Amino acid sequence: MFSESEKCPKCGTRVERDWNYCLNCGYPLIERYDEIFNLEDFARKIEKEFEDFDRLFKMNFKIPTIKMLPSESSFSGISITIDSRTGMRPRIVVRTYGDMKKYEPEIKRKLGIDKSEGVEEIKEEKEYEVPKVTEEPEAKVNNLGDRFIIEIKLPDVEKEEDIKIQPLEQSLEIRAKAKDKLYFKLLPITGRIVRKRFENGKLFIEIEKD
Image 1: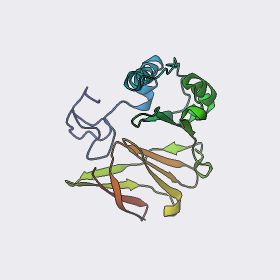
Image 2: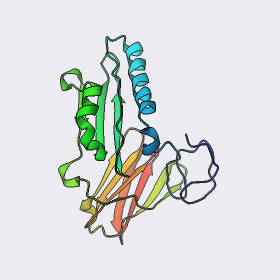
Image 3: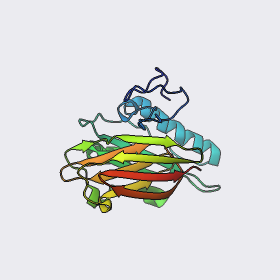
């Protein structure tokens, strides 16, 4: 959790230490990808998750040793989601982005990805291949009691069909294709999407809180 300052590092708005994101601009007040991917620290976190599941389900589950490789791009990362259900082995979903794709063989080998054992790999859809230029759009998040109103500026995006909104387990992923770039935004917000619209280069999303 972000805790070294009481101001948002992006817009300077005062924030509380227990907030997950800035209510003014939507900037995540959590560890960023470049901090998480400081190699061995991230590997230890993943190993601990496997150990917890091993104790919980009393499975003979081999814990892999993961050595993450540094990325040469400012936009890259890996998202690992573990879905567990009573009496079943955990299902692991892996998503890779940007330059991390070149390290997929090593990541898969270290994680021991095997679909026959309930591990699933999800790649980016072909129509959303990452262009050479990736940009994080400006976002504004309004907290209105039982819901969030999100406004994201997406200049150069021509139509709503070029925008993909993907609810994840603990966040909301927004990707949008412009002529020569990809807009990518990850907001630590969960809930049900009530409505959305795209007009005048802006995407509006209304989310009902869980």
